[in-house]
Image (cartoon, rainbow, N blue to C red; front, side, top):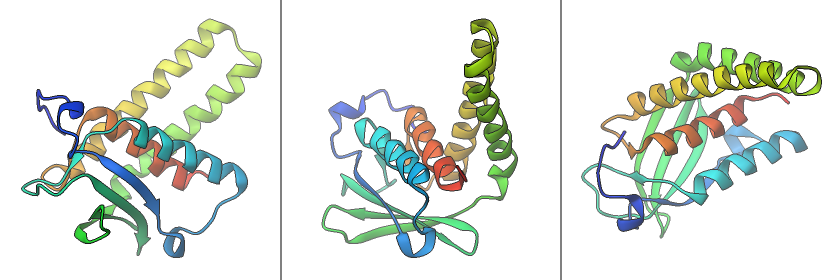
Length: 166
């Protein structure tokens, strides 16, 4: 994660201009899954800070896929030339993904039946788990990719959307 005091807007090269999913390894989802994936990608594209350490070739394109139960993150330049590929084990994310799924289910159920105070309490827990997952993702990518906390949160949202069964 970057603690860089220069805002991403002042370094327009340190950003993603596209996020693509590898259909061959991820596959298509249900309409609900595809919608969640699209929204997650849109959120990333709306605002992000992303760079490859020791590389001055941004902005970047990110291709995400799966290889042997590992997420692969292939970073390309705008001309689609591969700069670097990282394989990310999802094993460290299993517990937080499971907990996040449970709390999201509770949140959506609470919206229908709970008091505003109960909904707020569940939402605070949901945001806390989301933050924990973002920190874990940033830690796992440290030294490989330079991302800020908000971009890590948005990338975790996409990872969760890829996992989500609907």
